[in-house]
Amino acid sequence: MTQKAPAIKIKNNALKDTRGDKIFFAINAFILGLLALIILYPLYFIVIASFSDPDAVLGGQVVLAPVNITFEGYEKVFQRGDIWQGYLNTIIYTVVTVILSLVVTIPAGWGLSRKTTPGKKFWMIYFIIPMFFGGGLIPFYNVMSSLKLINSPWAVILPAILSVWNLFMSKTFFESSIPEGMLEAARIDGAGKFRTFFSIVLPLSKAIVAVMALYYAVGQWNSYFNAMIFLQDESKYPLQLVLKEILIASESTVGGSGETILQQYRLANQLKYVSVIVSSLPVLCLYPFVQKYFAQGVMIGSLKG
Image (cartoon, rainbow, N blue to C red; front, top):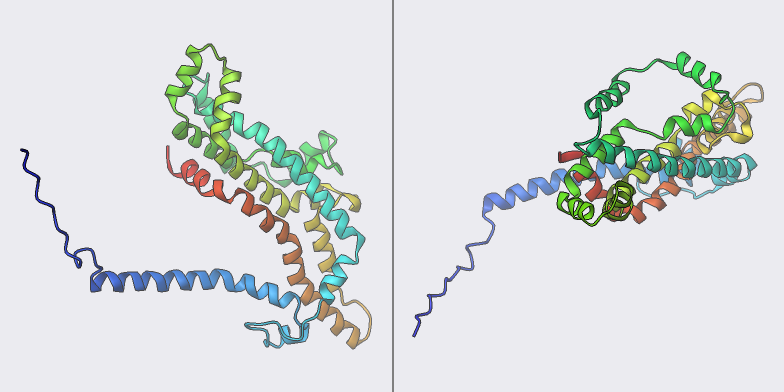
């Protein structure tokens, strides 16, 4: 008969945290809680200030809860027809930009990740240079003018369809996450490069595709500078530029009595907070749909390689 090995007994207190461990965890929890408070409170304050009495906000009475709830700021914003036109324009610009960006960034990242790509070092240098050097605003404007893109929606869309940082993140993801054995098996089975990319690589790359879509969508949604420079027709303005025009108009204090100027100042102060909510809410609603891919795609695409 075989002799059974004696069972190893672990004392109950062997895995318990020591006093030093508890102090360490307590300090960590305190620091993380403080950082969370520093990050979350300004966001919370913007929300409660957006529907609080402007006088209470200016007087410092709004701290932890709204005071004298009023929706005057939201009413002023949504009564304007250009807000809805700005929303529509921004949605169109964002959707088109995301589609074109994915069409450009994902295949380019895949190509740069392959060791057999002809001229790989040249293309890497070619993409790196614009990250550190730019021609400036005047040459940029001249290029857009020569391409007949002034006052065209494409002046907002085309400059945003490729981010070199996102391209390198995609490249690193493909290098570290796509098994070479699977690609070799596909070649043995007779799959060409296009078939391999669309049937094998893309289905395994949902994480980086979702992260790229979120990055490009947020970037285009928050963008206003190119629109401010190149768009002349107000009907083509994106939401951010419309909100900027509303704030400028509400802060104008030219003429009028002292009471009118005070009312304009109060309204302008509230519109600042309302504008943040109006412009940020759609992006916040989008994030939960890609959150499960976000951490995986960002960590693999940025740290490995």
